Image (cartoon, rainbow, N blue to C red; front, side):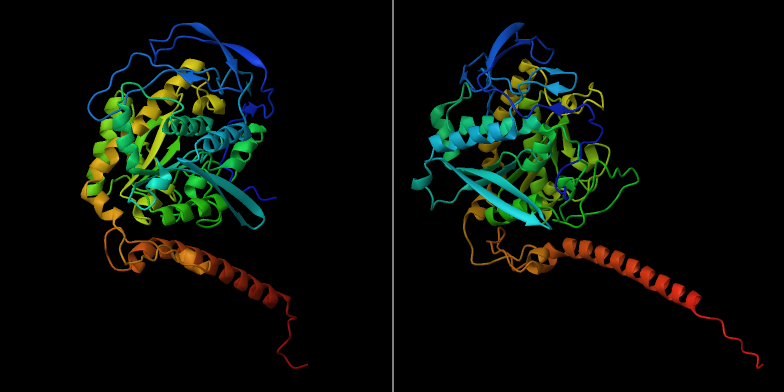
Length: 476
């Protein structure tokens, strides 16, 4: 059986989740005051897992171009009581996706939902993609600032998909951010076309919910930029890159979406720590040029406004102490030419045991859970507001269609199709520049297979020589 595409569960041997729940059952869970939110009072919340509740504003500040957080009076706490390795009352992937589908159904003028399927060698996957455009039917022909957000790439990082739902709820105005002029928000959203992938690794998430600790392919090592390179501290259980670049249906789907959508901003959302990363992951440097300065400037502002300067900022490879090869963000920046490509880490419990997988990557109390969603949803709306301003001239150039097409990916050609899209910078077809990284990857694979074939050939020759009868050369 093929379990490619399921990210590793590392040493999370205590991770057990209930994949069934009674949606009518109410649970009483204490939400105690924590150090990260001294406004919270110790209280008891009655939680109904079938409702998300309404938003209420609490004291918060807003300054400059950023959006401050809001505290919600949420009647549901998905990531509740974690005891003896069991998460009780946690919503399944099916529950969350049903809520998203219902949200899209209630707002057909702003939201659309597409499901894309792919398979490879008997392993299949499907990914739901929600597209937001304010007054969509009235502005379909107008240039938009395009943003692509991917959540849930790793099945164990449940909190990221909850953030996707929160952002979509705010975009559709079922929940609200405080101290923000509605007219100003409408003006910002009018310029945007946003695609949200709420749960990239649906198969991995389902295995996590079932308590199955499969160690399969890490989808964030299955991209072509510097794919397959192994550092001295390489851990095959934690960084399995797959059999080849884009061997997994999930990465194939996201690549096709990114190439066709041609975003100005890409953000890959994870948990495990608090960080704001820009390229590169496969080396400990940041890119050269204006876009690098723009990315870093935006991240530093986000860190100050929403992380209170506690988030790690910089290149992924230069900040976390290890290099990651074959990541989505490096591919988006180098190959798809996304001007602003980021990886966000929205939560991590550094004090959690390495064997307590759920607690390492997800909040386990109501106050922390709500704080994470509030702060990070506000951070994303700051990006929505500041992103177009940061790109400036690059944005206006990118919004104007050109007659030039770009050959994006050699492996897509080998699969039998070319993806045509507008050239963001008005250059000629960049076959060499865009394909060199993937050529090097395939060349390494070719050399490896050649060496293996030569070894097998030599082994067969050696065995055949040994099997021949020895004939005497002396006449009898």
